[in-house]
Structures are given as structure tokens and as C-alpha cells.
Image 1 (cartoon, helix red, strand yellow):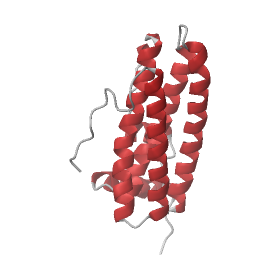
Image 2 (spheres, one colour; image 1 turned 120 degrees about the vertical axis):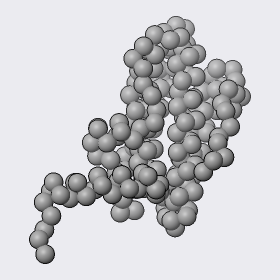
Image 3 (spheres, one colour; image 1 turned 90 degrees about the vertical axis):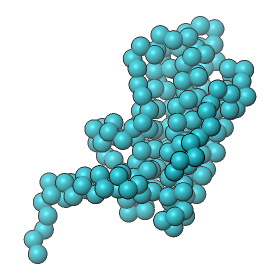
Image 4 (cartoon, rainbow, N blue to C red; image 1 turned 45 degrees about the vertical axis):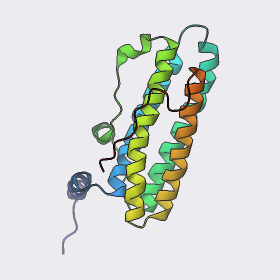
Length: 182
């Protein structure tokens, strides 16, 4: 039996990833979360760099903490996928392909409240994928992955509540309820 070339190994990985994303697996759904974390990293920095007005002094350290947590979550989640014998996306092109958060270069010119509200919506969008990944991890009997995702969901909920409080809102203000279609 001949050994696969590096190119053949990568082609097989991409083919399997495509299959896993069409019939979602916990690993594929978790790769969406990983991809969203990469985009979120850029978006959090955008807010930190460009927030203006009296709230900027208070928001910049908050966003520094969010960026640090985001980096930690990205690394932990990639390691966890490897622990689960899954392959985390490892190129920018793959991460962009599977990210569901949207970027907009003009967003940086918004006022502080709009920037914070955008972050809240991004965390809420992430939670849609987290919830789906939790269900898939439980179905596939991946307790370590499910446990990390449940804890991550809780951390996202905390960030949403704290950012909403900064805006003078309750935790779920302005956020639609999640779809029941799974």
C-alpha cells in the first residue's frame, strides 16, 4: 500500500470537512465556532482601536479583556478538537469559509453604543452555533467537548449580560429568540 502524499492527505481532509459540514458533526460545528472566534478577534480589536467619546476610556480595558479571552478560547478550542481526533481549520481561508460573523470596515465609525451592541449580537450569533455543537457533542458521546462548550456558552452569556448592562439593557434586550429548527 502506498503512502499518501502531503497534498493527498490535505485533499482528503478537505473532502471529509465538506462532508462533515453538510451532515453536521460536533467537530464541524465546533470548527464554525473556531472560525467565528477568529473573526470576532478582529472585530473586538476594531472596537478597541476605534471607539470614541466619553465611554472609550471605560470600554478599551473591557475590550482588551475580551480580546485576551477570545485568544484563550481560540487556542483551547483548537486543542480540544485535536484531543477529540478532529481537525481544526488551520488556514485563514478555511477559517473565513466557515465563519458566520460578518465584518464591515465602515463599522468602526459608529458611536460607542452601536459598537457595543454589535459585539452583543456577535456573541448571541456565536451561541447559536455553540448550542448546536453541544447537542451534536452529546449525541456523539463527546463529553469533554460538550462540557467545554457548555462552559463557553455560560461565559458568552456573562459577556452579553455585562455588555448589555453597559448599554442600560437587560441581558436579552433586543436579541431574538433562537430558532427551534434543528
